[in-house]
Image (tube, rainbow, N blue to C red; front, side):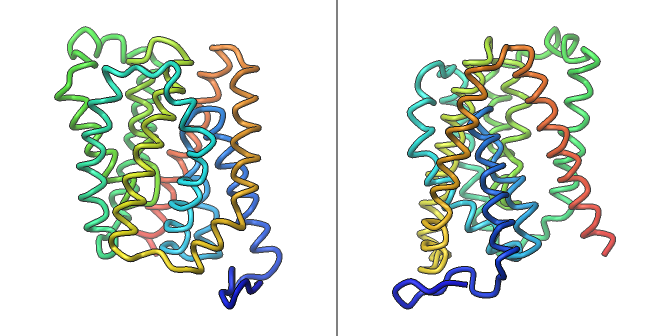
Length: 265
């Protein structure tokens, strides 16, 4: 659409399509500012329609990295480090595997399964079935945390987002307060984005066009993150958890629907 220094950004998009990309990024990073996670999947789901899946996934990887400049310091305030350290290491293993298979794997079944799992776990939480699970399984077990983190890193990298939605359902159960949950989410999101950016860069998947597009979107990213952070500080724990579950349910339904549409088409 526009040319800067010989590099054209959003080359095939009209004004309406560019507006959709900007709005999607604002909404996604508003959610991330409020909850500490959640930007990638809403953005990928919306922008894939105008950018295509690979372009959308790589662009949001860059804009998520930019957002961490503002958000990552907040991830050191109330983080549950006992859980976060184990999860960060497991996620790195999963991200490495996810980058390796990103270009060739069929993701539809993976996305469908992820959406179904999130819906099921949230319904278990709402019906208080999780309380019975806590009596059987040590949710803070390093082995359980490592397996969940590796699966989250792989799924999130391959599908362009969504892995952290699965992990947040687990964190909702082990973090004692909304502040600890949000800070742990921010820290893990930052670790996820930074490590994935490093591997994607090493794989040579970023172009000057993508880098410039991310810089063009950056003001919207910072504005959405700032607005979402203000929402978090103004909310009560009950409102926070209700908003969290609403976002998870909508995202899970979108993931499930996305996988189902592609499998049936």
